[in-house]
Image (tube, rainbow, N blue to C red; front, top):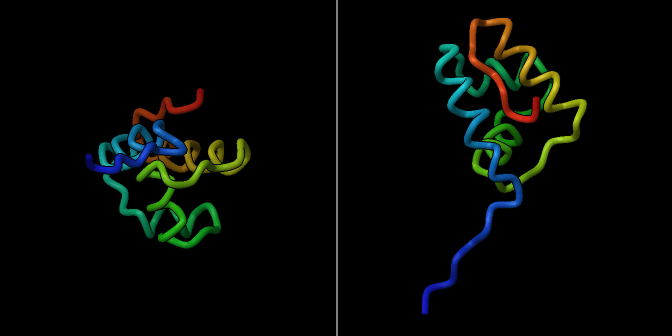
Amino acid sequence: MPITETAAYPEGVEIKIARIRAGLLQYEVAASVGILPSRLSEIEAGRRRPSPELLQRILLVIKGNGGNAKAGE
């Protein structure tokens, strides 16, 4: 029987989709909010849950670039 991994933050994929739609790269968003790209990657993959403050900063950056950010709103 295969072992399945449950995402700690399933909404992360919504952040990734909004970021891509906004035409932003991970390192651009990460630099804008003051985190490493690897941390943003973990959030988008659902392996890490951002604090409410960090989520708000990420969404503001994405929205500011014309993205359709709605995760956590």
